[in-house]
Length: 475
Image (tube, rainbow, N blue to C red; front, side, top):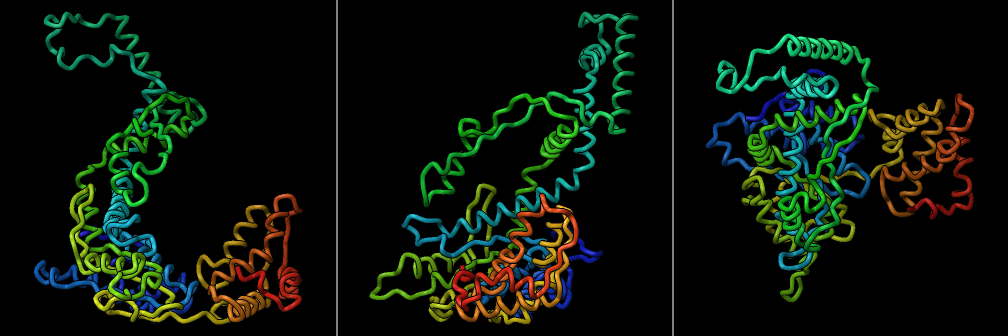
């Protein structure tokens, strides 16, 4: 079983009910209630499955989800936030990255390998958080040794202890004892100063690992996994693992040493075992742009970028075992969430076997003017809140009026209606046009309050919409 220590506002995230999961998603995503309910039930089913006996668990497969909707309506964001709520390893990947086996391109088995890598990083992060106090204490001891090393006579040979005559050692002289005591007193003073924060700007010399950037893959496209394995095996010869001495401030040295000590305390075998277990039972794969590989073969010749990829994906989605460098990983209980706009194709263009592996289908609605207005203001990390926070760093207080929000939403909806509908992404373009000049001038401009209302919005966008030609916004 997994440790259930992930909390937000006192709640155990993995034990959330579907209604509570939807409430968490509502904090970041506007609308799309059907999709939120579908993923909330899928996540709750994970919890339900873990309450069953091992025999019952083995028979229950996840109900994979197919999200259908135009770009920019929240498909990716729902999957990303779901993984945060679940504390689960999430891999987001585009279906177009893969080609049929035998052709140049990524093998679909890389999905399972990448998912395990995500799980490894998650488990490492969790373990390092638990080990943080021990790593900090060990780093402190190493810092003290760098700042005030003890005299060599203060660390006698443990094998010689008790047998001074056999090893030619004599009782320490008064001079040696005095040197030892003086060294210890210096270290005690340094420890006090270090704990008080008086030595943060002092410099120490320590060894750090130098990693030069890798120069791409060894074997070219289609052989990424083999390239990574070879680079790991060759180690320093490939530009990683070399060590050199550097002089750094104590404040920086502490961070480096804590990372080194934490890494020493990690049990790599236990991490790999837990990561594989987490990937197998909680892993979520968000397969985006699945509509781009939708299509049937004609004349018995499968299209390399379409039906061939679908047939290669099928065993992975159905459940198979993939070998990774950490051990075999089973995909039987990985939750797959596929998404696509299906503007030039339809879900029925997928091969029947793959269609059947995505029994839960939800259609996300296109965003209207009111939805765009809510997106600007309601989410905890809405675009407007981001701009206000960024400009505040330069001493500028941005006061954004409700009428300005209405105008931006109206224009975004108009452009999406008249041209390519890119959903909420249109808001980024419009806001950047309105606030771009303010952001540029903010560091040198006089600090103070800047008010933006509907007139200011129209004035800043007049050069784009004065002739009713919105093509310059259709990026």
